[in-house]
Amino acid sequence: MDKIVVCLIGQDTSEWLDLALESVKDADKIVYIDGGSSDNSVDVARLHNAHIIERQFEREHPGAIGRARQTYLNYVKKNCDGWMCLVIDPDEVVEGFSKLKENLHFFNKTLYSPTMRHLINDFCHEDATKPMHLCLNRLFRIKQCQNYPETEHSVLHSKGEKCYHSVPDLCLWHFGYVKNKLELYNKYKNHKSKSKIHDDKFLDSWYYSHMTNRYPVKEFDINELPKLIKDRFELNKLCEIEYFKGRTSLEPKHLQDAKDWIKYFKTDSVLFLGSGFGQRVFAVNSIFNYKVYDSGCCAEGIEISKLACESPFYDDNIINDTIINLDKIYVKNQVKLIVAYDILEHLSYDELDNVLKQVYETTSKNILISVPVIGDPNLEADSTHKIKQTKEWWINKIESKGFKIIPTPDNFQYKEQIIIGEK
Image 1 (cartoon, rainbow, N blue to C red):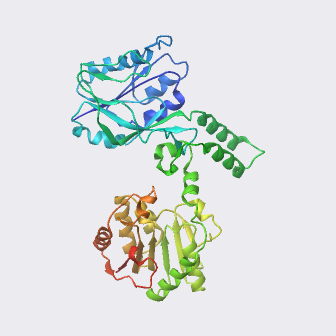
Image 2: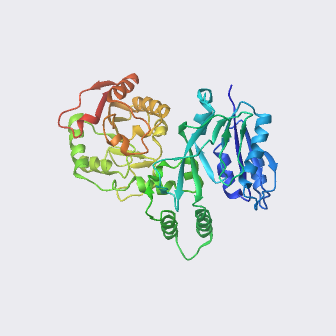
Image 3: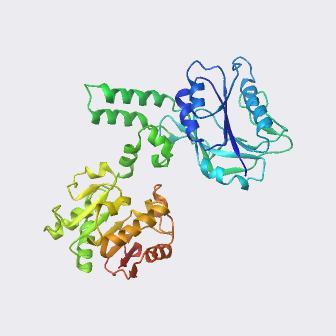
């Protein structure tokens, strides 16, 4: 079975090194060349089971970088001959490493150049000087003929071979131009725990405004950041704020749908999966205008976002939880109609199977599903969409869980994207 070793050089990089090594924790071996750190970089590397070679960085030598890289290359040529090798810097995070490792047997060339995304100034702008940035020869199959030239930006040479091969699913996120944000993050955490002048709302506003400076560079959806980065810098709340922009108001379509659905399904109980800011729950309850459950409403919602549940529409009819826990919240056949409107496409395939099984047990009659499908521009417009399939695929998936698909009434808004299942 093919193996992969990850190599990097660094000095006094402990604050970022942990993040870099965490992103390649599945490597078969990690080799870290330390240039004489005065901080705890070596200790951090040891915590990740890296093989450490301590070698004083020759700062004044014009070829210092190439000489340092040659050190790990000599080591892997001796100990990992024939393996794949990925080279990263301590201020980079690798996205797609697990998939790379699973598919090592497909790499039949010697040299590959992963893509790189250079974050510039903050966490939602990147370098726009090129349509795509490539890290030349950063991924390669180890051979004895390879070497690094003694230059500042040293690129691996492999005798008789040139690299024309990119790796689309492998991306290195580079933090070289956002390192000041780590200091900002530490200030934010310190103020959060100690400040008696500013409240959390002010501090959040201060932090986010500094993390999202607007510069004349290419902007991207912050939800594209790998989960590891979002978790480490506590950006998930900001991701929610960005995601819900423009999705917070009650619109006429919400009231019209509520009227049409209640009339057609003749239901007195509706459960919304992923209810967002609660507009549809609010609309149905406004039309029902009477109590059914002990909770005091006939329409309820489940929403994972705490931010959304704290909206102006929020009441005790929205549960702040994940729809994956549906069977822990509701009993069998408790609800006559379950509505999953623009939510199921955000799940993984395994999660979808699990949720649909629970939906079948929870509803006593119908499910109404709205999903963007292949051919719908909305499918690609949202970076959080995980399932991208045809309408036929969705119908087959819903039927496989026991539902019978019935025609969508012509008067339903957006009928082309609605699928109705019946038990």
